[in-house]
Image (cartoon, rainbow, N blue to C red; front, top):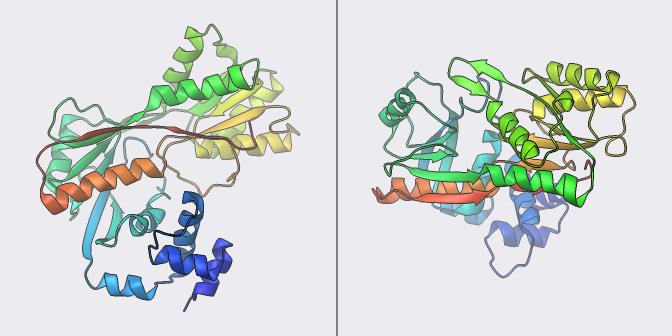
Length: 325
């Protein structure tokens, strides 16, 4: 079995820090990043502190469904789900939560639902049939039936553009990304249209530097290679998803394109479908931890109190400055 020493070594902190963080000692002063690293290490190693074992006897077990088919291709994994249980441990001792990915039209026994994206009436009726407790994230609900977490998508894009063009003084911003047309709608079109609109309003949109294909590693590789070979690669480029980014960065490496010296790169991250190979990269995070935390807090309130009054929370995106731009 894992020990505190093992967790401390994995998290690169002292054993005393591990003990105090896992025991929810409010007097210890650590950054949110260090706290998250400790919980993630404990979760990965399967370490459970004595306090957590005692608390487990009184925890309520919940199954939360995640409806993500509007933002992730159905044949791709949502790797973010594996870390959400760790996030719940950081938030509360009241619940032990399992997360399952929902498929439209396939009934699943759940206690509550987090639904990401814009859904049709038919899809909403399906979700309603599974649970009374639903939180919509970045949706377009114009009623007060459901709790909502609205991500300030447009402001996040504008902040990213301002960082690249005004602060870093890059001469142009291009795009390498994809669009997926699936049975439940299009994925990727909104982010593409938003960045085009923002650049058009600034008079800095150059369609020759926008390269759009499929949402896949292979497409990202081919598009990046074509942009380099045809000399249509902008000085800074937004990579439209983690899969596209993996392929594009591979092409840059093969062609000897240095990041960020030859091209600055920002990766658009909504829901992760791959384990990150660029932890120090510059990213526009659409669903950082505080989005999930707010969604879970609202959901727990609905489930435990059977609250009927709907609540809407607006949160910003997060521009994580790294070493690629």
